[in-house]
Length: 332
Image 1 (cartoon, rainbow, N blue to C red):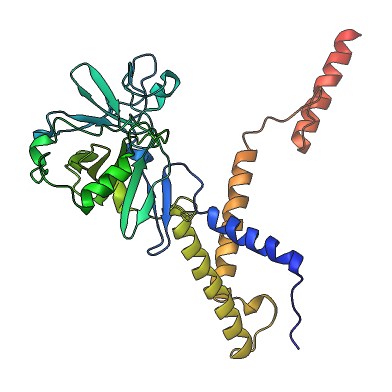
Image 2 (cartoon, helix red, strand yellow):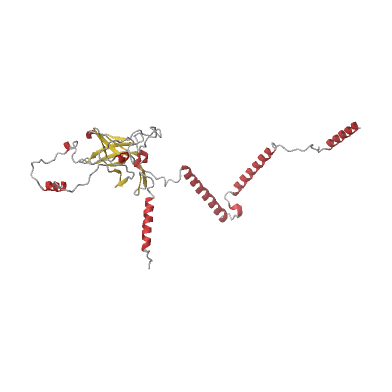
């Protein structure tokens, strides 16, 4: 009979599994795709704020990313995984402490509308890498710019039908105390891989919005959306890979040579090493070179001497004895 785990251990196992899965996401604005094993890092396209009105790096941008609205009569400004670096003031429907956290906005006349607060959590919707900003300015129920697009608007003189009754129930009767929650603008950005090295880091395009101007859709083409192996998996660089290959080759040469010399050639001791004669001769040659170099350098070392150095030849001793005798006669 197979033993059963205690019930108290199940939460621990589940928590350890969840922790192992969370280790894949260690950096903000980074997401791991288990379907292909790649990690997508959007920090490379994040516009960093200026330090003392100066760029930290030569290639840094001095403004956030822009997208043309074309027929939308306005342009859009946004940043990825960070607030825009432009100074925000008088944002419609957003409290002042939250102005510094706006990640996307557009301006109409003198009014600035937020399209969402900063988010550092990209995710996958199927195979698409997307980033979502929420909690922007309040949505407008009737938009002047969208009136030309509403072609199928019923006249007020038409008879009520079931759809009109449903609309009336949704809006509520006059005098009702029920208040609908405030809907706020949001932004959905879809990222597409672009490996063109001559293109800018990001090519941002405006796709459209819903009829209430509440959700805005964008497409961002960038190299950052192509993905790659995470830094945690890239533990070895090119030099490390070459070193590992060299170590494996050396181990195969050494172990294979020892096995051959021991089993086939019946060698024992140091002679079990592959090409023992070659390595022994090379070691002897290196030792001889070392002895020659050390003996040559020893000639340049100064020697310590005493009062006098006695001559070693018999002629020298006789000359010194005669000198001493002459000095003795002079003293007398």
